[in-house]
Length: 208
Image (cartoon, rainbow, N blue to C red; front, side, top):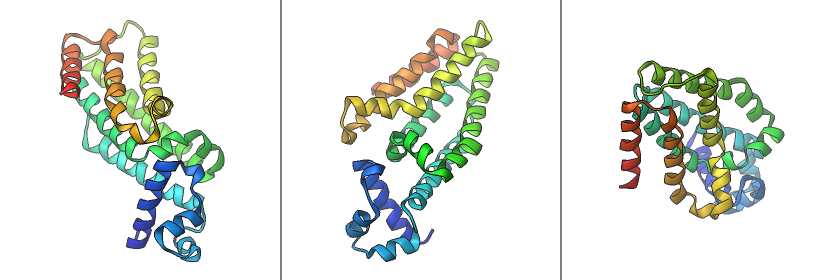
């Protein structure tokens, strides 16, 4: 991506986060950037192309967090999720418009369903299994394990949607701690003694 494309993507992300992807047109973006619409569409022929490019950047940044932070303890898992939540906040427009994008942008839908969703779910399943193996978590049955996996996945994908119903789009950052604390406490019924210690350590840091 060259400097002009980066400039367009950066400003588009800011406007999408502020107003919502559905409510910012290419002409409005071009005017905001002081560009002719033809110059804008030279770099991104359609709005779908622009949104897909932003979604790719989000996926790549999430992948870097996953790759850079292997999970060995429950604290590791929660800390990694904190970084993922913060990254989701940076790209909040994608999460808040996820259902619409999946229905309308075929490239995003194909990439998410074919790659991202499977990779994230297999990674989450692996992390939970490792935490059980390392004796941070203990499940009485497979259904309990599936419940914690599904609950984590659901919360990670849709916490912003719930948050925006409570606060305005501009005040979501201050709710992040609440949802991270909720994620940590989801594990408490299944945590061993050292798992509880990791939960308390993580929540304690959130409260500082």
